[in-house]
Amino acid sequence: MNINGKISFLDLVTPHQGLEEELVAVFRRALTTAGFVGGPMVEDFEHEFAEFCEVQHCVGVGSGTDALRFALIAAGVKPGDTVVTVPNTFIATTEAISQAGARPDFVDIDERTYTMDPEKLRSYLETECKRDVQTDRVVNKRTGSPVTAIIPVHLYGQMADMDPILDLATQYNLIVVEDACQAHGAEYFSKKEDRWRKAGSMGRAAAFSFYPGKNLGACGEAGAVTTDDERLARRCQMLRDHGQSRKYFHDIEGYNGRLDSIQAGLLRVKLRHLRNWNEQRRERARDYDELLADTEGAVILPHVPSWSRPVHHLYVVRVADRERLQRDLAAVGIGTGIHYPNPLHLQKSYQHLGFQKGDFPVSERTAAEVLSLPMYPQLQIDQQRHVVQRIHEFLLSKPAGPLRPFLPTSATSKEDRP
Ligand SMILES: Cc1ncc(COP(=O)(O)O)c(C=O)c1O
Image (cartoon, rainbow, N blue to C red; front, side, top):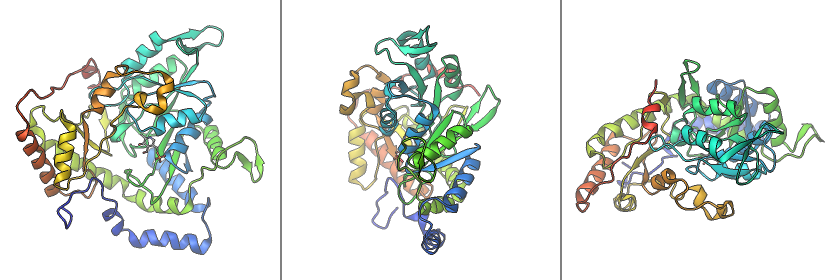
């Protein structure tokens, strides 16, 4: 509990307190060496983060949005292409698609994991697309636009079901760019490969955000692309730096999307603690699971399939009367979040894509029910007990009536494989 009895949704002060000397030393080093852009701090961080993600290359960039945009362009997405993702994600995923000149399209999420449902992806490719015999590409029947890439989003710290997504990508010749912005260190058991794989290591490339509230957060804006593809990494290096192959030789037009050296230095200090912090998040999630176990379906808890080792960026529950619960918790000083209240296909900014209510029912339904509880490594068990006690009181105070039961989907059996 804070001094004032409040429990914040996020704590970005405590984790920095014990690290203050090391973090300030980074700033001093930048001042004494005038190393503000590029240089060894960025290169060292890139090297260490690539190792953490178990990939060959990491390219530090200005944000997660930069990382997604550069990864798509470098992987070969062209203006006029269609890139498929999910409606239940932060808008940066689709902004990056549009900024690459492509058109976002959606497939719905799985009701239990909240990530891309591979069966719906299959159905999209089989029924809404056709193969263009001349180009041997998959084309969206309605728009005539070639579908060239998929962005599975590893949401709330849990990876999407990658094996079937990658199989479909191979079958339909699609590029896969992982949106790993919420999943630093999350793991997926690939049955095909019979081993655990790290987020950011499975697609052609992946994007990470180091926005301050992420599991690995900078003290400002930062992001990274990870990949095993050397050419793609080289292209991202050029894209982030005005398309330069060497100073003032611009092979392509690029962007100003470099990773700030001070942020890279701060991230290096924090990266050393990431495994431990992720482990603490797992403990916090286990505590919530136990404390909320007796709500008998009135609160749907996060589902962790046997193929997933999540890092609990967020602890997201589902309740029928979400707005009232959020207000009740806020009234006693408990901060919560909603990720996300309005699915992307229904956003005003995407009206031109022509989607309607009812197009992606699982995303729409979960958007009305999800609530993110306070979650961070330093959260205390007595704070969690307090949050859960208030939830229990809320459930008791609710007027009698059926609580929305969990509706298992066809995905239930398939996603529980080891
Ligand atoms: C799923 C997802 N994708 C992309 C981004 C974009 O990252 P950034 O804010 O660093 O540009 C975020 C960050 O909030 C995110 O959560």
